[in-house]
Length: 147
Image (cartoon, helix red, strand yellow):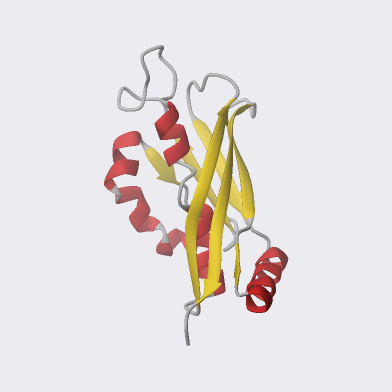
């Protein structure tokens, strides 16, 4: 499903310019893997990945997964984010976004009970050796649409 549904995002101009790519096909409908090569368009003044590009590659994907799986009866927004840079990013970096079906069911049930929720999600940006370059925390806002 993601290989078709998210194919458009590889042509989204901010991602295209930064060299951010959603990899296809995905292993399942609950996982999105994103990759970014170091290029002259996303390099900073010291020759490593620009921090804004590292964050941009992590920006929409938890929200997109929840929009897909919660369905049209729910509103999902990004509410807050933070990023910690742990080491310089060189070469190709990647991040894998995954929300298990059981967690999605829990989020749906919690939203139905409480009206709105603000869950946290975390993802690591890793280099080609699997070392963590940055850690990103995302707070989302979820509520049911008015009926």
